[in-house]
Image (cartoon, rainbow, N blue to C red; front, side, top):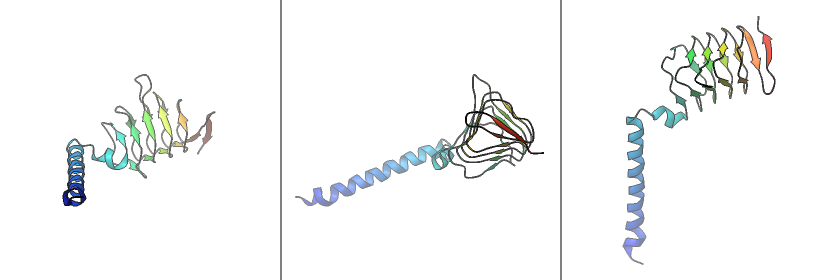
Length: 142
């Protein structure tokens, strides 16, 4: 075997792969997709209060017209999305557990807690804990 096939060709291949990686990374950063690249999040929301906290912000999906109140806590793998063009409205001081889905035109009241893994398809009253897997469960926090 020649020196070219043993040494030069594999080295050129590695340089080409690294160059392509850098090119793709720069394209992603230039387009503003760096957050999605690093955290696997897809947040197209227009108005996000500064007081909103994301604990372990991995896999969070938030639709463009979702209304989020002040001092909310959103954990990993949460989906806040639309159903038939309607988006959820999240009140102030709401905690949303890991893996929860809030879909459609539902209203989450102030101070409510959405349990981990809950699927919310109906309104949640203020200061209430909502847990569901198959059947909704409400518990007053007052």
